[in-house]
Length: 169
Image (cartoon, rainbow, N blue to C red):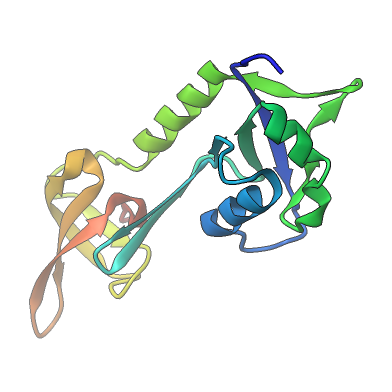
């Protein structure tokens, strides 16, 4: 097969709940091999004691169209994670590499939130879950937000991934 800039679209099995990035990656490597290029539209990063997760698009993963990928499609049903590659009118559906590049950029940007200093925020996960704090600083271009949390007995400052914050009501 000639070099291509097309990516095959894999559909995840929607009957399996709580599928995470690691599960999808392991299934891709098992079915298609370790050398195939892939893109999973989920970001998962450990930031201190927190895990920052951002899902750009649920239900799909992408692999670069190549001979190994086409051979792996024949074995795709060996994995419970995938329901198959998108197929329509007798051919596999693909997207151009520029679409994948745009999706990667959108995923990177989804990790960053713009909060003004002084904004009251609700913490959505981790040890401070459901507590309200005040934004006192922004780090890593908006990926990490410094939040001051006031409790009756003390005041704490914690770096929180922006994906775990929302503006408080």
